[in-house]
Amino acid sequence: LAVAGVFLPLSAAQSAVFTHIEGSADHATLESALNKVTAVKDALADANGPFTMVAPTDAAFTAALPELGIAAADAATLLDRADLGEILKYQVLSTTEKVNPLTAGDITTVQGMTATVTVSSDATPVTKVVGSNAAGVTISSSADVGTTNSEEHAVHVCTDRILLPKPVYQVASEATSTFSTLVAALDTAGLEDVKTGLGLQNGGALHTVFAPTNDAFTAYLTAR
Image 1 (tube, rainbow, N blue to C red):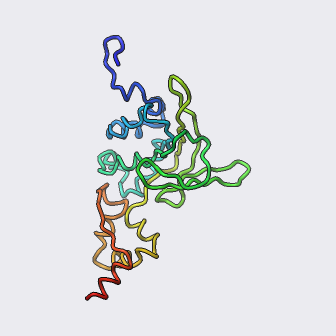
Image 2 (cartoon, rainbow, N blue to C red):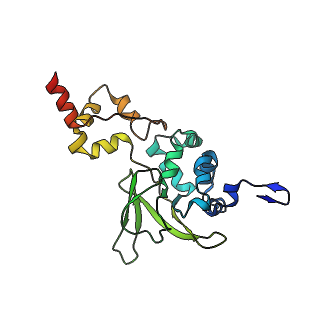
Image 3 (cartoon, one colour):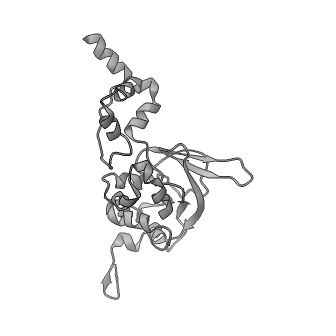
């Protein structure tokens, strides 16, 4: 697209979600992250929607630094993590239409893993989206985001922390009927580095893990 002789990237010109984030004074870090991982930013083009996104504020990113093992003085390194794209994709819910308000239940994210929405029964309901942290992220405000034709997208703002996907070790430790032997092995003294490498405080390293089940361990021991 060209305006007055200036060529604009198609995705930037047609991404109402990114435009909404870009225009927010509270989402500079999220904007920088999306500009860093252009594949995710481009995927938010209106033509690929509609989108429902959890949008962490700058305060949420700051609050999440300890969970990611990042010192406050090194906050800028968050944007250099290899898993930044996975974190950003986890903020986008995989739906066929915008979801506003959010309703209780499990929902799949664009990253592929699920998150869980909870809605309290208080007089003023509190909505949370739960990922790796059981406390979840609290939705402080929500908005329908319009395109030139209609309000196709929904953006849900959180200020307390980032919605993070469960790392490998956490997934295994929560599936005790399948992976209790693997978890016990990882908890063995001397394997702390391996265990850390499969958690959130691993500097953002991405891993492909062949995870033997309890039955696999039993079969191995029986065959010895």
